Image (cartoon, rainbow, N blue to C red; front, side, top):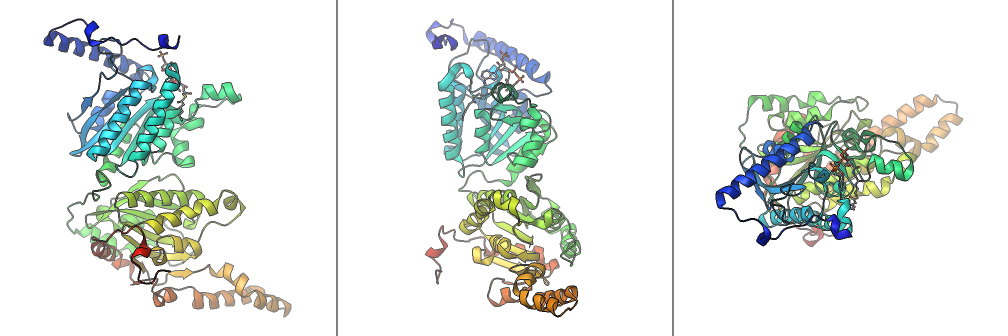
Length: 529
Ligand code: HXC
């Protein structure tokens, strides 16, 4: 009964004999037929076909398909399966790619599709090249039952084993349901397009049938939602062309595999970069109560002002992305003063942690720009698991063996200061701008605790409470909120003026170029804690 659901595959012996030319012409004719059908399915929905996407992604004329006829199908209607696999060049570098073909049974994954994807992933790992997947799929092929589910298990295993070995980027270009969403979730970066891409474990129809909830695809798993709310998506593209363009740009920052260093760029000092670096101090107001755009600070410091932000819309109180200093690619983590004053919350913690772990896996030095008032306080955050999820930032920095360079540009308070690439967490070079406020907590909170008795006395004496509080805050600020103690105990390597920041980072990167990446700092520490 079940076997009747599978399409019969003919053995070579059964196929009609043809000469080479007839055979080639026949295949071309079938390929055209299949592509025309794909165009009809996809163009009507405002989407490109899998082959058109591959052409747009790859350097012109470099895509070479493999295993088109794996599992048979040469003379069949579909000519191939629901996924196209192969290799291409992007920016002149080899990349493994697979693209799901929605025109073949909704791009669903059956035995053959799984076999092709697993083969490609394994080969990419063996050959040390990044993997890009273009997804557009209804998930496990319902007709193939548990055999399709088993293939998903194997795809997940292959993707997980490739994680940290070669970079993996998933581009979602249509509906992705069921198993089709977990594959991308296991990769390093997910790109989604506005309007046409969706990710959900079960589609709206199934949701309605099971729970009675009526919901649109957009509400359930649209690109905006996954980019701003869940953080599943790392980039919200305008359309397919933008998604593929972003993918090419992202790839240009990444090494081919974990044994290679990230690409370096030829860099010539130029007037614009010098001027921007000289003016960076003007961007940060001295008053800690005034906010500013940290992205502008970053773009004033990096080569050519080029910063590729990752997960811009998700947990925006922390900024993550790639840039270069004097030609050296780095990962950048920074607090965004414009959003909740740059506090760390559950999502920001996980965002920063995951990014630092990616940088560590692929040898990116991490430059951290700190201006943080602390972890965000309150019941909402405690209940959301700020202890468990906030701890991820600690693990990421504490176990990172890549060069870590940190600059405190203004505030650095409490736990958030210490976890964001502090010297105590293993950073190689730590600097602060003059006037940096480094302390366990800000004056307002601290006075309530350490001067509680003095405040009570002032109240009992009928003194002006606001005046007494102001005086005590000033005393605390002078005594405890400055970089002095950090300099005295060696938590800072020095104070630098804002204008010196870019040069200092470039020098620190040069000094750490041959850093010996020992997995356990205790192994070589003179005085283990
Ligand atoms: C087989 C499928 C399919 C599937 C779609 N098709 N999904 N065939 N298995 N999983 C087929 C349709 O029958 C149809 O075939 C064609 O693909 C196009 O589908 P449409 O529904 O016409 O397209 P559209 O309206 O754009 O809707 C796309 C969709 C919807 C949202 C993806 O098809 C859908 O909801 N599919 C099921 C999604 C789902 O719940 N998947 C979970 C599978 S379980 P014809 O011949 O009519 O053109 C799973 C578990 C893995 O994946 C768990 C691992 C942990």
